[in-house]
Length: 381
Image (cartoon, rainbow, N blue to C red; front, side, top):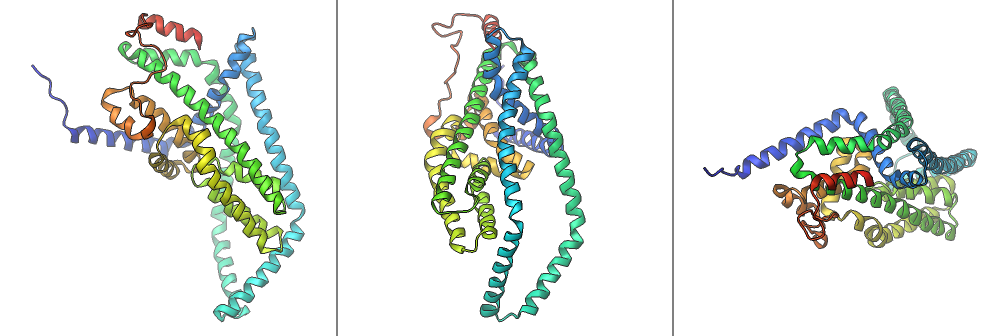
């Protein structure tokens, strides 16, 4: 008796239902899933460092603790530098307030001359807008306080989650292998290995990109004499980590800060010129060579994924969307019914559905059974 294949409309319906369920899960459980995802990324990034210490006869717990201490020390140095720059910016608030008053007066004159609106009429409009903002401010303050509290909780839990991921990594790997059928063990190992390498290369590429972009930003701002050049350059590089729209946000923020700290409107223009030029260099040289080449996901799917991630989980969803798509691509390329979806996610020049990282047991040089193959990789990890 020949088993008939499921019709296409049934398959696509099941796929859409699964996607819908995943979106609902992300929306309602995002506060739990997002910190876990960040901790997993941190654990994967620190895994080579942990292995390095373990190879030098250090215990698992000391190796993990030292690796986490190094990582958070670097983060602490960056936070301290940014905080010191912000404090310096705050010390100039009287001067900044004076600059804002001058810009405000200039804008009033422009509106009066070009729109025939008196100063009194402009003041009335501003007062109405101020009253409306005041009436709604209590809700915004409560929401902001909740967001800050949630951020602090995530920061406190992040090292704990990362420590537990690294400590229980062998058990988690064994669980995944045992819970899925033995016949797929080789493919599962291959997906896990490739996903780990993809995430490590992607995160390393992002850090290299951030360093290069920050250096170019600071150099450009210093050449044109922009105040707070170092602070603005690093801030723009950090915001640039948000895929595709990060540099646009950075340009707006940096232009506003420059507007408040300078009497020359040309400084605002030069800030926009520098960041636009850096964005062009980043999009055409740095990003394709250093970051995009490590995940090999086509631009169309990346943009759609970033928009969907932003709609589901805000900035965190945007940041996590690219590595998530890369891992899904790795899985789809190894599951026969899902290979067309893997092809859809892949970059056209890099689509190799049969490529694997590990030698297949059925191929020459791979004459080992799956259980031995699992044990060898388990011991290696």
